[in-house]
Image 1 (spheres, rainbow, N blue to C red):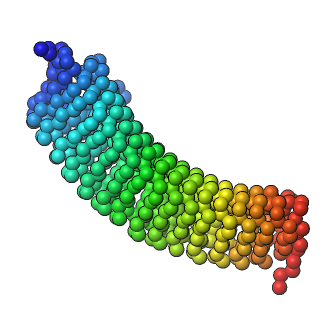
Image 2 (cartoon, rainbow, N blue to C red):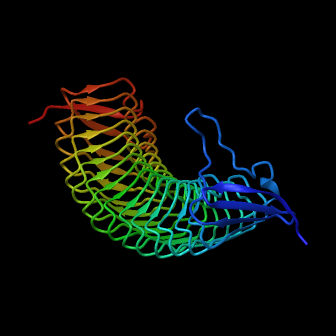
Length: 405
C-alpha cells in the first residue's frame, strides 16, 4: 500500500498529498496558490519541487477551483491528470515541460487556456477542449511535437501568438467562424500540417502565422481579411494554390517566399505594392496576375521564380525595385509600363531566356547590372536622356539611344 511521503497546504483551504506511488492529490475548497517569480525576482517554489520528477499522476478532487500558475512545471514523468468538474481556471505554464503527459481532458467550466499552459508537453498526442473555452493564449501548446489533432470548439474567439508553434505532428486544423484573431506565429513550424480551414470572420492574418508549415497545400482566405502580415506563409514549400480576396489591401514582406510548389496566385484588386521578396524562390510559379492598383514592385519580389515565362506589369506601376525579377530563368519577354521612372540594380539579372524588353520613354535611369547575365538579349532601345549605369547590360547587347516623340 502506498504511503504518504509529503503533504501540506498549497492554497487557502487547499492541501496536497504525495504518495510513494507518485500520486499527487490536491484536495480542499478554493483556489490553488500561484507559483512564479515574486517582486524580488525570486522564484516561489512549489512545495513538491524537489519531488517533481517522482510525480506520475495528479488527481484534483471536487472543490478545488483552480490550478496555480506554474504549479506542475517540469513534472517530466507525469503521465496522467484527472481534473474535477469544479476546476474553472488553469494557470499559465501550469503543465509546462511535462514531457511524458500523453492526453488531457480539460474540464467543462474552464473558459480559457493560459499562456504556455501545456508548452513542451512533447508526448501529448490528444487534448479535449470543452465548448466553454473562448481563448487559447500565447504559447498554450508551443512545442507539443506529438499532438496529431485538435478540435477548437465553436466559441473560441482568440488564438494567441505561438499557440501551436512547432506542433510537428499536427496534420489538420479547422478554425471555427467564431475565431476573430490569430496571433503571430500561432502555427509557425507545424511541419506536418497539410490542411487548414480558416475562420470566415478573420480580418487579418498575422505575421508568420503559418511560417514553415512545409506540407501545407492549399489555403482559402475568405473575404473580409484586410491584411496579411510578413512571412505569413513563408517556407510553405508544398503550397500549390492560394485564393486571396479583394478585401485584402495590405500584404507584408516575404509572405510566400520559399513556396517552391506555388504555381498560381491572383493578387487582390486594391493592392498597391508587391512587397519585399513576396514570391522569392517560388520556383514553380508560372502565372501571376498583377492588378492595376499596384504602383510598386519591391526588392526581390519575384526573385528566383524560375518557371515564370511572362508577366504583365500594369501601367500603374512607377517603381520596380532591386532584383525584382532576378534569376527568373524562363522569363522571355517584358513590356515595362509607360509611367516607370527607373529600373533598379539587378532588376532582371540572370534572366537567361529574356530575348526582348521594351523600355518606355518615361525611364530616366537604368541601374548597375540591371540586365546582367541576360545572355540572349541582343538589342535594346533606351530613351536618349536616360542615365544608363556601367554594366547595366551585358557586353553582347547593342544599346541604342532613341529620341522620344
